[in-house]
Image 1 (tube, rainbow, N blue to C red):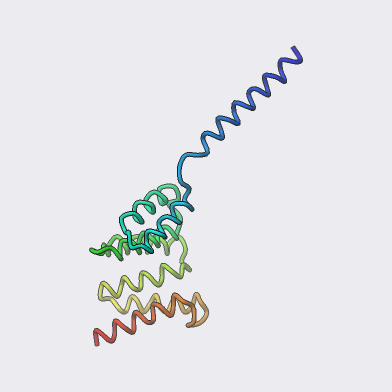
Image 2: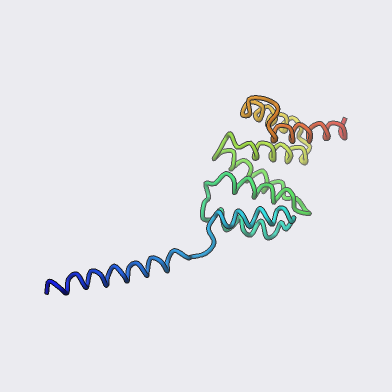
Length: 153
C-alpha cells in the first residue's frame, strides 16, 4: 500500500501538469496582440489593428496603452470616429493621467474637432509631465497646433 500511494501521487501530478500545459496555450497574449496591432497601424491597416486591440482590451480593460491605440485607430481611419477616439483617449488618461502619447493624440483629435483651446491644455500638460518642451510628444503636438493655427488664422 505504501508503494501505491506515491505512484498514485506521481500519476496525478503528471496528469495535472499535462492538463495545465494544455490550458496555457489559449491563444495570443495581450503583448502579441499589441505587437500585431502596431504592425497593422504602421501598414495603415486600421481594421486589423482595431480587431487586435479590441481582443486585447477584453483581456486587459485597464491597459492605458491599448485604449490609447484604440483611440488612435479610430481617429486615423478613412472616416474618423472622433467620439470613439475621445472615449478611448479619456479612458487611457483616467487609467494613466501621465500618459504622454494619450495627451498628444487627444490634442490632435481636438484639433480635428476644431477645438484648439482643448489641444493647448494637453500641450501644457505635456510640458508639465515632461518637465520641459523637448519631449517628442510635446514637440509633435506643438507642431500640429502651429500648423492648425496657420491654416485657421
